[in-house]
Image 1 (cartoon, rainbow, N blue to C red):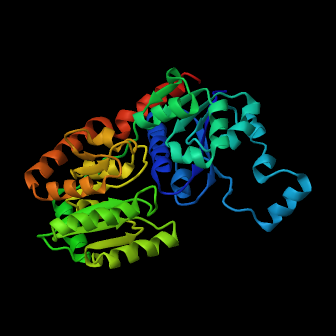
Image 2: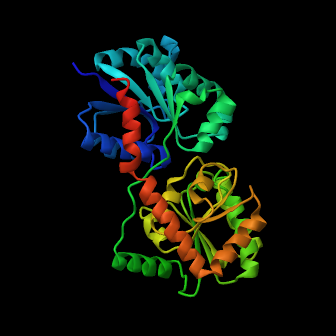
Image 3: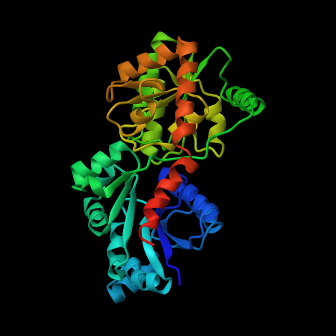
Amino acid sequence: MKKRILFIGHYANRTGAPIVLLNFLKWLKSNTQEQFELIVGRGKGLIEDYEAICPTTHLGLDAESLYEKIIRKITGKTKLERLNLARFCNQKHIGLIYSNTIVNGDILELISKSNIPIISHIHEMELTWRLGKENAQKTVKYSKEFISASESVSKFLTDKLGVKSDKITKVYEFIEPVVLSDEDYKRKRIDVRKSLKVSDDDILVVSSGTVDLRKGADLFIQVAFKALKKRPNLKFVWVGMYNDEWLRHLTAIDAHNLGISDSVQFTGEKTNPIDYFASADIFLMTSREDPFPLVNLENASLGNPIICFDKSGGSSELVGDDGGCVVPYLDVEKMAAAVVYLADNPFLRSEYGKNIRKRVIDNFTVDKQAPIIYNIIKKYL
């Protein structure tokens, strides 16, 4: 019997790493004869999408019910330990484990008893490691080979975790390119800008992601304040969910006290973020740390130039010197100056947008990157 692949995801929410995994599983099903299934630890947003592709087991590790607490006290074992994943792998004729994160160390430790080779696809960097060093070290211990989401992730693995470079293959994150007809593009742009009360004469600067400190939501406010002092017809919009009620109120207070509430909006989570990207003139990436954000790729595929910080992850690797502006780490003065500079130069915005769009289409699509991953997988089957 041909061996199967077991993919393990940590979350099934609609964020970068789970979406990359979803796109790869779609490609694998359409382009190969491999048999595979998926285990997901937490989250539910993508479960139905996963189930439409392959058998999917949800471990439900988000919270411990009263029943599970009682069983843990009786047995002395956690829910994860009671699942006996090593036996699960043997029963399913699993020949390869593909773990889609650095934070599956506890799961990999249990599965390691089955002596099945493990590949870990790493989409995280130092902050995640600092918040769970023991878990990350287990991932390193039990993984035979690593895939990194960017050059910045590769450097993190070698410098912080001591992984040998010959065990790492860099495979940049990838997307299905955003393709809109001219008519759709214009319609989305008109409709969204109208809903945001952004005029045709305004320059719309969009950011996107979970509203938190890692993504730089506080820095977004500071950049907006400094840029608006030089160019009042800028509008700043952040598309993404709040994880932190404290930060939700703090950003509102900051915007009010700085007198920019009329020019800065946080929309919350949207089911149609692409519509907002289509309405943008500039995409602003304020993350302190981000391995290789998919929102960058989505905006680039729409021709939006990107402004980002250096030393913050893979954003600068995408932008380069002709796809937008890379400014010194956390230098909000220079980031604001870059916003104003691009706002004042529509021809340059257009040229940067064309350059970065071509870069994404040529390099960072599912069809370009998925075969690289599959070639790694085939070595073990």
